[in-house]
Image (cartoon, rainbow, N blue to C red; front, top):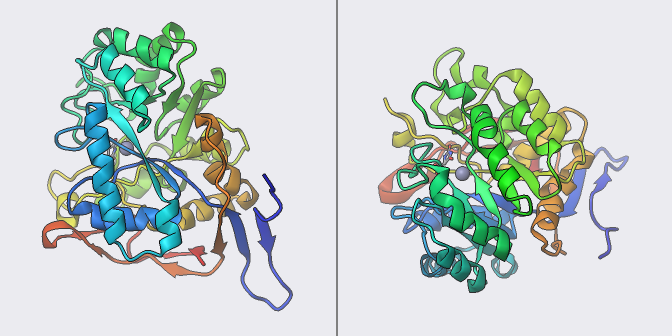
Length: 367
Ligand code: DOR
Ligand code: ZN
């Protein structure tokens, strides 16, 4: 496929703003939710992304291939009702995941693999995050399903955090890697694994130490922010997600690997909508909403350290290659022109949805 039209930087002499045209990106980790939420989330995702991997933590979760097929139909229906342009509608391609439970069987995996609809299986340790109550309580329940996933080449997507009450929230990712993930990689050496939304240098180093079948997604918030943004000068609920933002040293390491050109690291926004009142709450929900402006956010992070030339492969190549999918052949252009992030969007039941950095100005926008 020709590469000539992509990743071109233009900054003509007539002082027009810098633009960068990149291959159309995919989002390898997104929460679209269900029902009326899809009107908002699908429209936003489809403006920027062709393929999106849809997380299965609905209520109730997407546990079988049949659940995944009907969920995909609801997403497609919502897409048709949006007013985004016809070309974006044909290019948008929601890809489904199953929710791993203690009862996920080898037969469930076989059906999922043969459905042609399910692309991966998402493992949430029970209680780790939003709608994870039905998740895995102990990996000893997962042996048959993991064997089948390896056999049918269905990747495992991992929310990598232990849930034990005695483990500090800032150490939960590292402990899951040491206590659980290391074992999974050892026991299933051919299984494709994506460590989702990594937040620490420890996770980056773990991924780097594995073979090509182990990769990671990185969110915009973990590249742009650290726990000071969340906690200094008052608690900022819209920076609260799980795994939680870590120290600045971890943020720096994530930026380093994301912009290194190493194909193990690729885009997964983890855009996770919760109504404003559920975030700005005495017990606020975890999740940052970034579906609409994820590309300006990533561009800001990459450009901030002089690595805008590494953006395209991170956004539009490495994920597709990891999953063995063709590269997209359309493009999107980003411009180094200020954009103001909307204060809110309309959301379900007359609520609003507050995006990450609501009301702030980003130096990059989508043309
Ligand atoms: O912050 C998060 N929100 N992390 C997750 O793992 C789940 C997500 C959600 O579904 O809201
Ligand atoms: Zn997620």
